[in-house]
Image 1: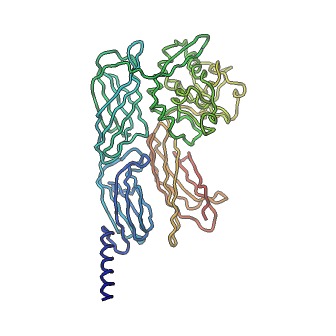
Image 2 (image 1 turned 120 degrees about the horizontal axis):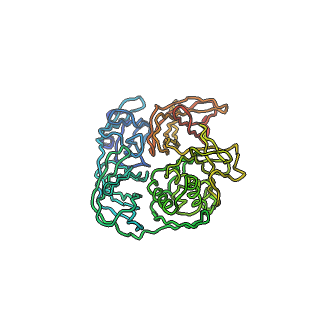
Image 3 (image 1 turned 90 degrees about the vertical axis):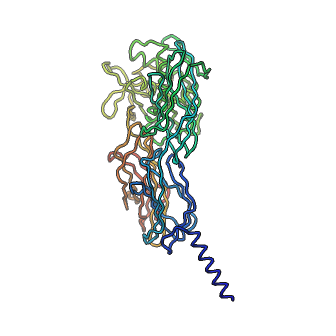
Length: 529
């Protein structure tokens, strides 16, 4: 009787384990998929899976073209992981049937499941406009729309085409925007339509993704009205005259930039060329040009500079927790103060918006602006040359009454000046996370690298490499990714797997190459043995 009870209990346990680990193909190692869901994970469309393993196994996730998107090893027990549906943030490059395959330590497939994932669209259910009354009519400064998604995947609004009557403007949206599956998102759009007359007008809005595929569209008619938008007022002096302008206080735009992550790069041109504030800076430039008629380019540049030079100087360590905290132009305009980096970034952004060829001139202890002008004499003026020999007239942005081509004595002929021209270019930074896996004779490090193109141009020939470096800087077990491209304002997720060298102390270095040149590098904080 006792043996019968034991046999019954054993049969029950075996049945229970088969039910719990349903879906297995190989009985030696069992994989059980508990649940899965599609979501956004730090800007990447992802599928979260929860599962149980009876032993160590490898998970591989394939896109509709049967290319591996994800591969990682997991130990036995309960696990949760986020699998990217795309190697690029803010997009799913192709929809269709994705597949998950699980392999044991002998590379035997023990589980497989398909996921039919296709990108849907959204509808615009509501809109709101904010107008400023001007002398000649109305100025549209903000357009808000509500998007309701009918997609099982996240949607990533990238740009909007806004039209009033026959005039259209393309506006880059916040890079943080994402709509959860079947979710709702309020999109705030900074726009600039000036001198719109009273009466009825047609309004059109098209929201696109990073590929310019339409996500939603909307059309209606509207009548401009005075929205009593809060404004920021500025008053300053130039050449004996006093000038004043007012600009709308778009708090949503300031909040976006104020909470935007600062980049780990010495090239601050990315703060100048960020496209999301283009419409707002266009409005500021129009207000400046509307109160002063310049005689020539130098007079116009000096007038624009006088506006920024009138702002009080403020050190970063007083206004922020960091000694180096570059501000976006909108931040400096709203806070009405800044240090040399902040005022230089703002000055360069305004002059660039007007159409001038400008640069940032960076010293070890200072920053200013450079302006290149054709058909003028550079003799007797302070200037610095870029790496290709183009000359940029020095423009001081802190302190008042500094004309173009006149530098303070301690910055008139410095050897440490680096000229960063403001131009459309890719600018790559990266971050990475590593997971060390030790099992039997296996000792590997799995590294997930996020390459972020914060520039304004697509990066075409990009490669990530990782290696362990000895104290003598000798690379060991070098691994390189395939060459890939990264669109502007998009992150790429690259995975590397390296064998850890034994018998020697090393550090792990990750390098990002653009066109074969190392443009970003980082080193592990811990040593490997």
